[in-house]
Every structure is written in structure tokens, then in C-alpha cells.
Length: 294
Image (tube, rainbow, N blue to C red; front, side, top):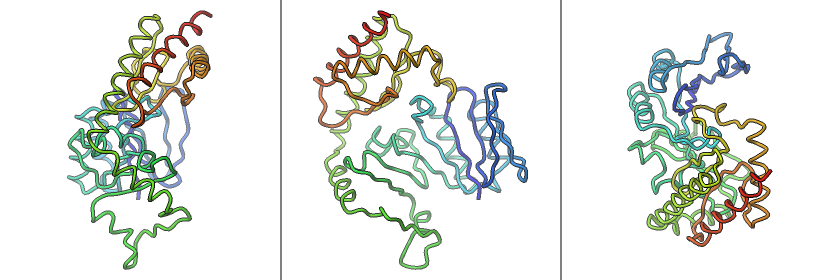
């Protein structure tokens, strides 16, 4: 059964229907993808995010098994979906009996009940990973009793869920311990540090007169060496000059004692305090001085 994958972007949505054997080719025409499905005649719908989603549901509601959405995709630049868009997805999926899947692999840490709780939404199925593992490899799904019943091993599960690493005891113990220790006040404290870091980075880049934007939410952040609107995946892809600047900045961060992802996206952790935030901002300021000196 096909799944509707939703890119929660701000301007031109990229909504498509994923169907087995879907042939998908990239095109530079109008800066969009061209989708081709010989048997199903699937096309990519354009328009405002809400209008495009409504059109896609109207066209494919009888075929769809699920709608999948990441509320703040890392690859699109950590820009959150609008409340109108996200809640409308929940309304229409519930109305038509379609399973709503929310990808909280990265974003679960944004709020104590996951990022979806900020929209007042409860998904039918939620995917989780990263922070729930206490530093160990992990992945999990959770959802309503009706949806999760397909995995029930006590009878004849309709969807067997076996695997070499399933229920790995080290990951299970580490994850359970981490979740018990990650209290709501501690998460709020981490999110406040995230806001302080994003605010501080914006000031550092503005003082250096370097076009940039700092996105993210809660304890998540991402640095972009351009100030154009992040409206879809392509708008977040850096030019060669922007990438060269970002690469040089990353190298200088290393020289100043900051080790992070070369994508310049990061997440704070509970041991961090204002001391680490200040150290990061000082390192960012020094690094910008070097890379802009030419």
C-alpha cells in the first residue's frame, strides 16, 4: 500500500506518493522533481503546503496506507512545519482513516512528549532513535494499540518484527536509564541553552557581517552560510563558495577546540552549561575572523 511522504516546507511543497517500483528522475526544470509511475500516473503536487496536501489526499485517499512527516527535517535545514500545516495533516488523516506517521528520530528531544506535542497532535505511529539510546545505537517505533497490534507476537503477527539487534540488552538498559534521568526540568534547561546558543551565534555572525542564518529548535541547531529563505531541500544546498566558507569555518572550529559535525548541525547534551555555550561562541567568533580574512 502506498505511503504519502510530506516535506513540511514553507513555500513550495514537495509532496509525492511513494509506490513500489516508482520510477523517479531528477530534473532541473522549475527546480522541482519529476515523478513518473507508469502504472499509477503519480505526479508531484505543487501549491501552498496545505492546499497541496489537501489535493494529494483528495486524489489518493483510497490508495494511501499512511502519511509520513518529519516536523523539522534536518536535510531541509531544521525549519519547523507550520502549525496550520501539521494539524491539517492530522485532521485529514483521521477523517479518511489513514495512518499518520511522525518521524521523531531527531526531533523527539525538542519537547518532553516529542515535537508533535507542540502542535497538539498525537500520531498513530512515531519513529524514535538517537536520544532514547543513552549514547548507544537504537531505534524504536511506538503508537496506538490498534497500529502496534500488527506486531503482537502472542498470536500470529501480521507484520513480524524480528532482527539481529532487536531488544539489544545494552541499548535497552542504557536507553531506559537515559529516559528516566531526562526529566522535564532537565530538558527545559537544555532547550534554554539551545536558545542561548542560537541567539549568540546570530549575534556573532551579524557582528562579522557574514550572511548566515541559525535554525533549529530546543537543543538542536544548524548553521547556514547564506540568508536566503529555506523553503525546500534545494534552497538549503550551499553554493560552492558557501560550502568552501563552511568547510573553512568547520576546520577553524576544530582548531579552537570545538568538535562537531561537518554539516554544522548539532545537538546539546545534559552535561553542558553556560560555560560550554560561551566556549562555542568564542570559538565561532575567532573562526569567523580567520575565514573572512581571506
